[in-house]
Length: 214
Image 1 (tube, rainbow, N blue to C red):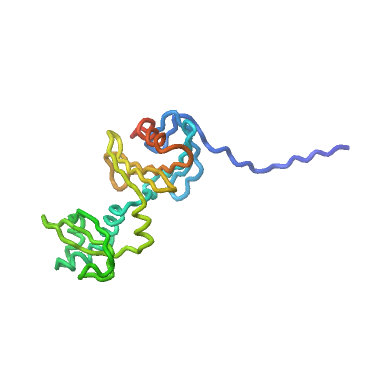
Image 2 (cartoon, rainbow, N blue to C red):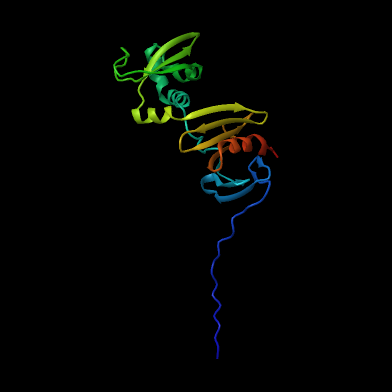
């Protein structure tokens, strides 16, 4: 007598893929999208287009790609350097945060330690614009981070639909995209090229991605 056993097992559902895919409000023409992860309110996956492969992340709290020196300095100034800067120019601590966004980075210059008299350990000298005046101010950035920032290229562009930050070093090419009109709650799209050329990647962003609110 033959005995047949039927064994029930769980099978992982196939990953979703489709043409003309949509990632949030970002519509990707003639593209195949494979969603691989939605943990922590961040969508992750792979985009395929004409032989290219692009990793993506989508959400409100996603990485924004590689930084160049200007972006790093602007963010670190807003995070903590502003306190010491306002102390340096004798601004009341009660209004430090109020004036924080009024300071603009005009220029960044790398210096040797000991070159700045106000800060002998500093290796970066900034020219900061505040209240119609240019004020020199020195900070320290670790040499390893400084070397990493200096080998990263960042280009920013604005289109009818988007604000786009292109970033590139020897290992990575990518872009961070936000709607042209956005708030802190707007979802961004981080793209990192896995397979393909930079020219094709740039053309893909310019021609294949549209913004659809609804």
